[in-house]
Each structure stands twice: as C-alpha cells, then as structure tokens.
Length: 374
Image 1 (cartoon, rainbow, N blue to C red):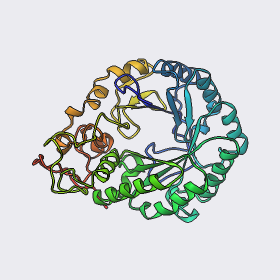
Image 2 (image 1 turned 90 degrees about the vertical axis):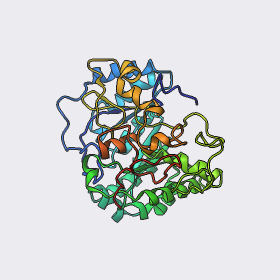
Image 3 (image 1 turned 60 degrees about the vertical axis):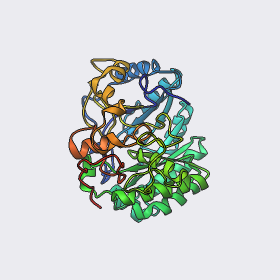
C-alpha cells in the first residue's frame, strides 16, 4: 500500500495512558502505577479518532501505553475507531489486565492486531528485563488466547546488550506462537532505557543481516523499529555489498552513478519519526515518535491532521536533504535516513547522524558521531 507520508502517517500511535503494572528496564514512558489525572478523556479521544479518519479510510491507529488496558474505555475506543473505518491495533502489557474475556471483547470490537512484547526466550530472561515475575507466562498465555480469539498477533522485541543473545530463542517462540509479524526495536536511550547499553553499530548491522535471513525463511513478517538502516543492509546484500562506503559491509567499489543512489534504490520505503509516523501522548502532545520528545503541538489546541502536515518539525523530518552529518552525504538517505529519534537522544538535534549506523559514505569526510556503547 502506497502512502504519501507528506499527507498522512502510515501509523498513528495514541498513548492512552502511562499507567502500567510493570517496571520494564527499557520503558520509554517511564510508566507509573497510577493514571495521570490530565489524560485525554473518552470524548477527547473520540474526537482524535474522528480527526484520524480524515487522513484516510483504513488509517492505522495503535493504542499504546503504559498499558492501554489500564483504561476502562479501551475496548469502547477500539469499537468507536472501527466504526469510523480505522484499522485499530493495540499494544497491551503482559499483566493481569489481559484476561481471556478482555481479549474476546477486543476481537468483538474489531481489533485488527494485538502486539505483545517478548524480550527473552525463557521466563528468567524475559521477566528480568520486564521487572516482573510471571510476565513471560502471562504474555505467552495471552498470545495463545489471542490466537484462539482470532486476533492476529505481533511480537515486539527490544534489542540491546542485555537481550541480543536471546534473539534466536525469541525468533523460535514467535514462530511457535503463530505470530504474523516480528517487530524488532533497536534501543533508543530515553526514559528508563537510558540505563541500558545498546549494541555496537557493527553488531547492529550483523543483527539486521540475520533478521533479513529470518525474514526470508520464516512464515511471519519481520520489521524493525528505530532502525531504518535495516533497508540499507538489505540493499547491500542484494547488490553483493557493492555500494561503496567505508564500513557496515560495504566494499571499496563506488555505487553506480558516483554519489547518487545505488541501482535499484528508489523512493523511500518504510517510515521514520515524523515521516509516516506520529505519536500522541496521554495528555495530547504530538511528537514525531514516542522516542523523540520534541513536541509539535497538542490535539487539545490543534487538529492532528494540521499538526502532522504543517508543523515545522514534521516538515523538516520529511526532508531528506535537511539531514546533517554523514547521513547528509549518504546515498541511502532516501530509503533509510537513520533514526531521527536516536540522533535526537544523543545530540539534541533530530537531523544529525544516527550513531547506531556504522556505514560511512565515500563522499563524507566530516566529523563522526560519538559511538554508542556496547
């Protein structure tokens, strides 16, 4: 499906609440046990969903948290969005809120996909990362019950130094659970995630190469979050690494056409912060992503459609020619562009280079971003 990301996001995320029973080590939201008193009300949420429908029929809306099921109106909001022609999905936590009856209620309300987080192939590994004994068991049980309820399952997994060795075991579990998609998130140091170590850029590239192998072999789809260089790695593999550059698997040969895009690279595919993606916080603030905490407006004051299309921050993020550092000289910038969230987290500038990417364009001779730990 082609989406004009100047006009609408491919994915719109609404953080219903930051309340959650878990205390996950990587939590972007720095989730708390109690709900915030200034959360968007049910009426305000319905108005947001009405506005989201203006983007397009079938607009994807993800209800996230915290734990979205900490709100009593979560199922009603799914039902309301479905009636408006939106593709409603949800990312609940693996807690006591995710009951058999709740899952069937979500299915009856028209939920199109349920996304659950699994960060280890065993209870010990997952529960240690999630900060809650029994989380693995609850999540796996909910995954199986979701399948029984007819809800397509997506599994989300965080990649950092603490979890990277668990990826093969998680991959097997994703297959066993019959998931339709494995979404692999490369850590951005925000919220409690600032306390974790990322993988090194070189190891990140190796993991992405392995994920391409998984995608070719598995019955489920694979995508990355905050790692658009996954597309660069895939293109380099297709072309036998003959894409120039001084690291990241590139060879010494220059790309066809000198400094232009390598053969076969066309318009951007996938999404990045502000370019095909928008995030509405629990109190209505609009961000390019949940990991890029520079607000562009608030849905209590402006329509989400206007903020996404016209806010200067979003417009800059959709301009690949505005990128700085080595990303600005990269022949892959139109199909990758780097993680704008990670650039912002490390430098305070969302247009700077992504420090997780080891690839250095041949034409770049400027300063290098500070390497990530791990």
